[in-house]
Image (cartoon, rainbow, N blue to C red; front, top):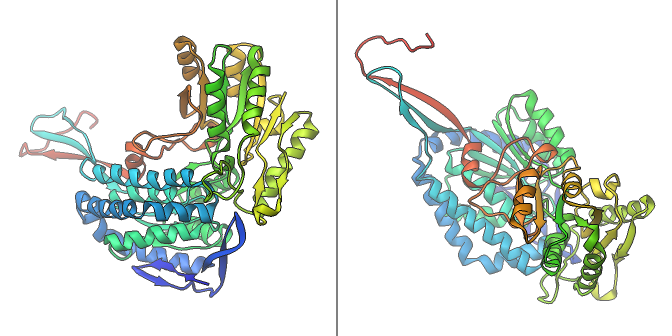
Length: 492
């Protein structure tokens, strides 16, 4: 069995604890992909101190030079895309199609952020005084702690890490313990691309030990976290006490609204991709279907028929549409919501069970699940399940549809299907979400546009696009007086 190490100060090193944990293929749990360091606060401290020492020289490196390293990493990612996609499927479980998007997203993110190294714009504005120049410039935040989830194990580290280092920050990454090998491979590529020692550091381990230590470390200036709302709230409270910068993305309970004039077949296609790709294990998954009652029976019938044709199995099999759940704990959690939905009075139309056929080799599979006649107050309509479960909520008219779509604590993504442009634009305006789609599911963001949500989905930050540059930099205002004498600004 291969043993993988932490990456600190340009070296692959064992953890201080000497303890290890395994990463297993969720489609074939007997397949161990490797052993990884179970790190604690001492390993985090070593990585943070290394990052702190490296930060001064790195911030003084011109941004275009920093970006050149990211560009080299992108070329290596492109050369190894197929190999890396296969690894993502083996470690996380999703289909090769999904995994290719995962790696492709990391590549696109790197390309975009390499370009930002040439564009890290400030503003030059007129001064209110003669012979005086007024401008702003961007400065790195400092040492950034990055904590990433398991569902996008190549993309998420990349689209946080690339803008952070292009902006002149040094980083310590604590990846999800379910997908550490993907993170190791990414760091091997960064090392090959020539990132200087100490600029990027990788520490594997569990959230309650390594992750918590990273959040609490006094020399970490910023935490960027994607994960559950429960953990995100704890991070915000802890990091806020030290006045750290904190960027949180904490999931969603996303709705596809289907108006009575919608192309039903197109809407069903959207639900199949939005609700069941990655086995529903996406923060933008289309988990609620808000359907006008005039077309609800037809919509549910067509959706159930198409769901019954979905193939569940190993993501490496090209015939597979829905891969496994990430681990046994999450499998049990998904199944618990089926019981909750039934107890609450929702109608179970399809699925609702673990799949343990002999052909599935003990994998953590769950049947694609459809509930109908769900009411907005039910837990399956309010809580993020993070599995292949979708709920139909029937409404009478556009106004009620928008009210139901907005009726959760989350506000990440929302979608509307309609053939009427006025109804579509009204829905876009009224959605309480950071992302809105028309005639498309609630997944499918693009790297050059901001990503994030409102309400309890996050804390106001946006990732990706130029918003990522804003997130990982501080603004410095600069005045240059060449008048030769004392001038007093109006505020004085």
